[in-house]
Image (tube, rainbow, N blue to C red):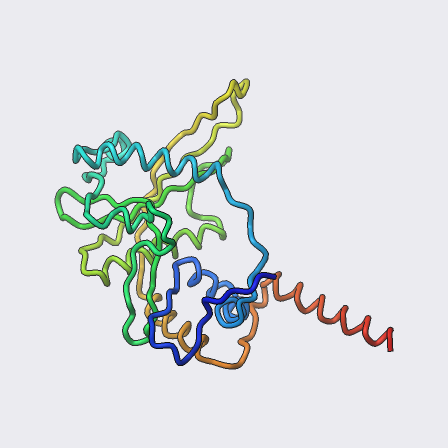
Length: 255
């Protein structure tokens, strides 16, 4: 397990970054979150999804051309979304184009936690001037694209955190966010050196009311010297307990 130096200490005066992914981490398992942020005991790293990143980059390039022209994308027109890609001097920071690992952020003064997240895109509504948070997703499935499965609940929370951040930053943000899915076609007669994707958009009505209470819970968790209970469904905690019990058995056998 890796150990880190950028850990939370209750007496720190500087704002402490809590990213969108760490909020999801806390909701998944408070114990794993506490061990990660307080002691630097991380879960094993997941491999990078380089193909997904490539699709994201190509979509960003595509929308950036229209951002300069203030023109709608063909998908916006197809789905009757009256908007254009949003342009702002800080957009490259929010999207983390320079790999600074922060993105858009808002300092929650009550907790001194800097809530941050890296967005994929933002569109601005032509009629209301509200911002629509947009998230790109890559997949390859024969099933109809939807937001109904259990693991996509995290997608929704991700969207809502971004909406909350931009609301706190003072922007007028629509409750309607958009997921742009790129679905790889795996049923073609051959590869022939290229992948073909079908793109679609699913709208999502975000609800940010849960975020403020969770931030307060995170602060309470970080300030505590007691290890919180693990989530019942956490496989990582179950694995740690199994290893600990096995180690204890081996010590008893050696004695």
